[in-house]
Amino acid sequence: MPKSSLDSIDVLVLGTERGMVRVVDSQAFQIVADCLIPGIPVQIVCYGVFDIEYRLFVSTRDGSIYSIKRDQSLKEKPIITCKTDIISFTRVNKMLAVATTDQMLHFYSFAGKCLNTVSMGESIKGLEPFYYAPKQFEGVLVLLENQVKI
Image (cartoon, rainbow, N blue to C red; front, side, top):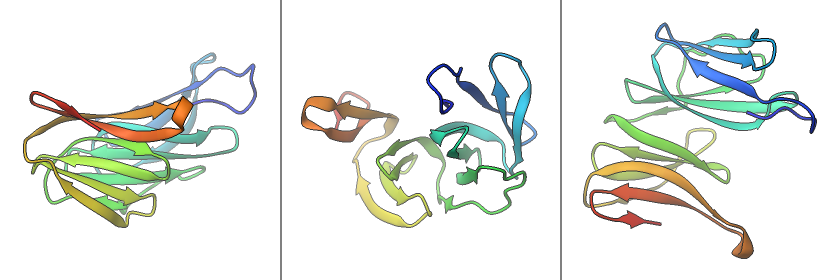
């Protein structure tokens, strides 16, 4: 996650087996922010700038996604709870794209409201954000068994 000024060094965001999400200063190796969640973090997606305002979206092993904002030290309630396990998730504009083991791709707002659901027809292997600057196009690359869909 970047800091606000141009000469600043980025910070490292990590999750521990005990459910702690930590933000570490990459120069001083000091913990600058902590937040405890009930689950074990699997994947973290960052949004914003550390010095000003940021959100961390954390998926857990039990199929939940938590939204951590600046100065939160404890997060008890998830914004998204999936019926099946989460394979991968990524951010596109102001939405989260979530791939689950039931071959579905769900799109959620940052508040956790389900905006759309797409059935992919085969098992999803992963997700990656896609940006094409000349046409100002943003999307999600969906990695399937033998193909990639946008």
